[in-house]
Length: 72
Image (cartoon, rainbow, N blue to C red; front, side, top):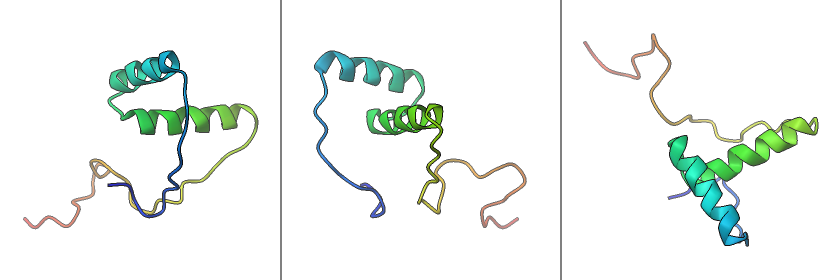
């Protein structure tokens, strides 16, 4: 389920464009939604705009050296 801080909206795309995004997402091990977000951030960056993520928690494995609350 989407995090409450995410904005949901309908997006209409050409089916061929969406298929290309799905292929790229699969190659990058992302969902199509996450891939669209990455592509949008990259496009904004090329235009000189940076967007800081509003998410506080990051997904995935913690950085090396952090135990994540595990006990020995």
